[in-house]
Amino acid sequence: MQALYPWIKSLHLILVIAWMAGMMYLPRLFVYHHQSEPGGEAETYFMKMERGLLKGIINPSMIGVWVLGLTMIAMAPGLLSQIWFLVKLACVIGISGIHGFYAASFKRFQNGERPRTEKFWRIMNEVPFLLMIVVVFMVIGVNPTG
Image (cartoon, rainbow, N blue to C red; front, side, top):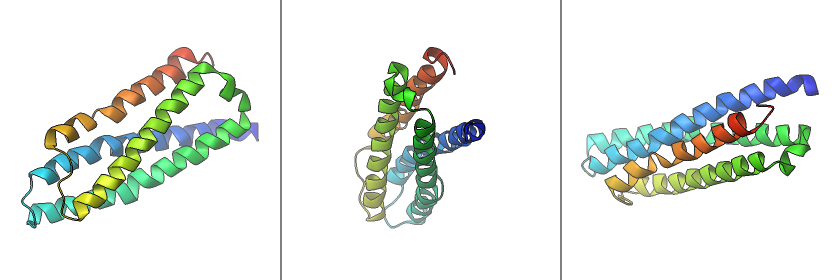
């Protein structure tokens, strides 16, 4: 089973990249959606793009990240006793919470609402990225096994 670990870790990282790309793009779409005319052609276009991004990339990627991450923990349970890993895990839980917030906001946009402000979505565009930076430093910079 240990021979599979590098493959699992690689797939995990690939899915993290896809998840984070989507998590940074969806709030940008919310900004554009906010700017579009209610009921207009642009709004319909952004709703379609948001749905495709969330359902086709962000949700499946997050599920894969968690499944593979939990698989790696099961294969190396000592991770749970390392501070760097616990900080990383807290950030991933935070990103997952933001993901849930984005999904709820997506539903509100789909119902014709304009939740929050454009400025809020511009700021939220950066939050997953900042948490990801912490994750990368924990995995690469602090973890002696990288």
